[in-house]
Each structure stands twice: as C-alpha cells, then as structure tokens.
Length: 116
Image (cartoon, rainbow, N blue to C red; front, side):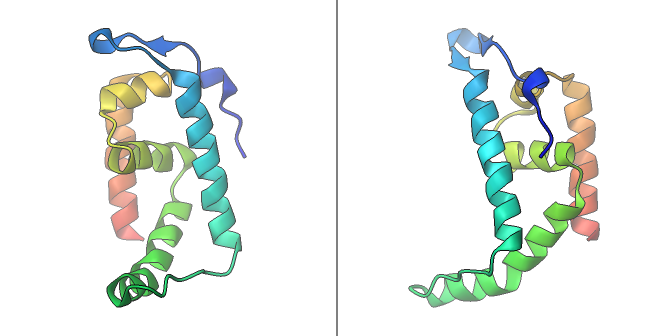
C-alpha cells in the first residue's frame, strides 16, 4: 500500500468547523485495505433480499474490476466524492492538493471507470 503520511496533516477551518484531517486519512487507508481484501477474498453475497442479491451478483464484480484499474489517486478522489459526499475543495484539502487537480482526477477517473 502506498504511504500517504506526507499528504495528511492539519485540520479544516472551513465555515468555522474543525475536524481532523488525520481521521480522514485513517478512514481512507482502512477503506483502501478493505478494498484490496475484497479483491482477494471469495465473494460473500447477502441472502436476505433477492433484489440486493441480484444487483450484487451483477454489478459488484464489474465495479471492483473497474476501480482496480484506476490509479490510487483517481480511485481515492472518486470514492471521497461519490461515496463520502465530499466536495472537490474538501478533497483537495484532505489530500493536500490543488482543487483544479482534483477536478482533473475526478474527470479522468469517471472516464476510465466508464471505459472499463
């Protein structure tokens, strides 16, 4: 796993709120580890809801394969934006990058995700 310790530090002071960037770093690293583990483990399918089972059977392998083909930065930006509902400005602060770069990585990630 790529170490991101150099990219994560400080706190956010946006709109008077304060939250530790280190917490997001830890959550991100945990989600990356979980993602890698799901690729290596046999698939565990839910059995309580038939619709969930069907959707999981059909979509999950394709989404995981597509995400695996993205670079770590594109995958991180997409997951923070889509799954965690962060704005590009917040993602830029979390990842210690410029907001314009985040927009580029989001667009490239979306294009590559749809192509695979």
